[in-house]
Image (cartoon, rainbow, N blue to C red; front, side, top):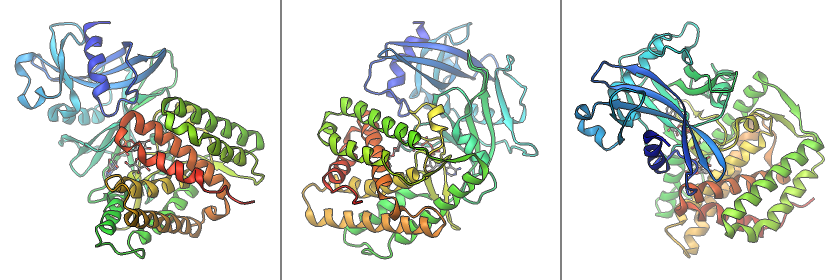
Length: 463
Ligand SMILES: Nc1ncnc2c1ncn2[C@@H]1O[C@H](COP(=O)(O)OP(=O)(O)O)[C@@H](O)[C@H]1O
Ligand SMILES: O=P(O)(O)O[C@H]1O[C@H](CO)[C@@H](O[C@H]2O[C@H](CO)[C@@H](O)[C@H](O)[C@H]2O)[C@H](O)[C@H]1O
């Protein structure tokens, strides 16, 4: 490995967005590097690197936005995000650092949208805007610090630039679906994107998406957990109305978004072979997760039964493009209503699988899991407190019911009439969450594990 690759091999596993945590990195290979911005001999320069991280015989692509400056001109506030000193693209060694924290570079990056053929001479990285759309420049990007799988920069109250970290060749579904829904009141309007030609791939790959920023909104997870917390502290609103009005409205919005996706993009009906294939994929994920998290294995037989019941359901299930990783952190509440973000799907799943048509009930199941999460997360600090457990679990039940009611009222398939399908999808999501938490937030692992244990102990859906 080169000096740069050695430095990256140490830095990468510490990044929140690195999805291969817990597995040693055997090799880093810089696949491509392009200089997007160059602010003179003293820098700073902004480079976009596509790297391959080799772990256990598997290789995953990531995007890095690195700044470089001569060592003596690194401002003190960037010292904490320094990666090391090395040559980035020939010439003198420079300090390289995480460019998302450099206000000057983030401002210049936004400006690149107004000069699409500017500093990157190879033409292999392109800045795209929508016809007629003018990008307002002059602001710098503020990095969002939440529990993110990607890195987002907020420019004033104008835009969010979301840079995708794990890269899969082709158009990112977040861009594809936001474009399909553009104009809907339930999504943030896309304004542009950055794309690159990856070695060996003829279609462009999305590196980043520029979207309208929605100010003064609060995300669903913050609102929901505040409601559960208030309930547990005794100042809550009880069961009704509390968050349930919001949950019902979210259900209606979800149905609207699904309808718009079905209008804009292909739809079909799941064949028995398609259902069997979906069940096989769920079984495979369960096996992988059980190998990594042994506590899961004891529940595997009941979970497998749910998957078998799913594969035998003899009702024609409509399928279409869906959100794919739907949870309370993906929806924000604005004054007029809910807005849905992040149509990327599960970021660790290959894009070609995320682009497959699926049942919108998968998204319903994702959100139902999220109500359980909000309750389960707040119970982590109160083990064995039966009263609190009961209160939090009833909170989840009421909000799940309200969301399903809203979804059916909004014109979606009535979840109550598809309990076998929902049970399988909820297990599959919870299994995904077990893997996600084991790799990213081991302290949260109990939350999906306990849901699986409870659901596995419950009798299967009659009929
Ligand atoms: N257009 C937007 N307007 C306002 N806030 C946004 C917007 N896009 C993202 N956010 C905020 O950033 C958070 C993370 O965005 P998201 O697209 O879910 O990224 P990730 O895929 O990294 O999780 C959201 O939960 C939301 O709080
Ligand atoms: O980063 P993304 O939002 O694309 O999604 C990943 O991270 C989520 C956590 O930030 C994770 O969601 C899980 O935790 C949420 C609470 O933090 C909870 O609301 C979700 O229901 C639960 O699945 C998501 O699974 C993962 O893909």
